[in-house]
Image (cartoon, rainbow, N blue to C red; front, side, top):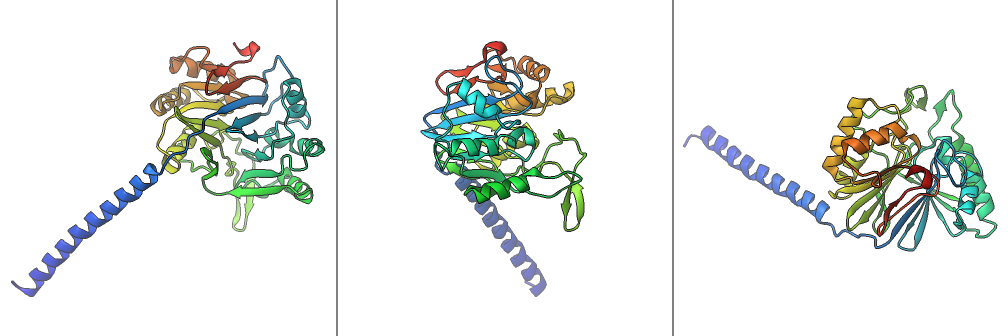
Length: 329
């Protein structure tokens, strides 16, 4: 055999074995990722403390919910006005003084406006109340022509002993309780104004709320997704969860999903995706939009008890499902 032909043959053989090894490595990596032992929670209750609709307490353009999971408590966002969540919790007979962890979905005031007041009042009972704040990378970025109030809030709260924990990737906060971290925008689910710019070392870029993150809780029935505004897009968020946390269905979606201005075509696309992901229960609060929620309910062929407009005091738990507010039934 001539030297050139022999060399070519060796290269071909080497290439076949190399590609096969790489494929096996890839399969092993993917299998390892998705075969990682799941931890599912045994108890979960989510209670809405701030949204527009209310027959108990105060309604506002904002969002907040108390998450109670396996004897842990997390305050998800803090509403818009300084005292709304504080007053609504009192109206509902909910004690927030033992809540030490706060999750902020993004920087907008309608999700962060109550934090300073809540910390000030609750620390009188428990010095550790709301002492850990979990945020996404980018929440403290300098916005052009608009003050990012999170910068001054961070300074004031850190002086008061509060710790800010910043996430750039998914993270398991407690067993079965996941923070998504910032979410890649794969699909075009644009739902922000586009009027604000972020200052960077290389100039300005559009503020697409890059820090937007959600909370997902792993249950035996699948994931429960909690979203503040869903500026990353509800479908982008679910795909992020399935790709980076676990390839499990998301059977319940709760919170704000910023579909209020969505076209019929976009809602149909969203409904088809939600059906594919196994979503069977929705509480559409805040910026989801009442009409958009009803259209999704029809497209998903859900009952009126499984897809409801969020209202102050409504709840979701693993045993009873959705307990809609009186005004939203």
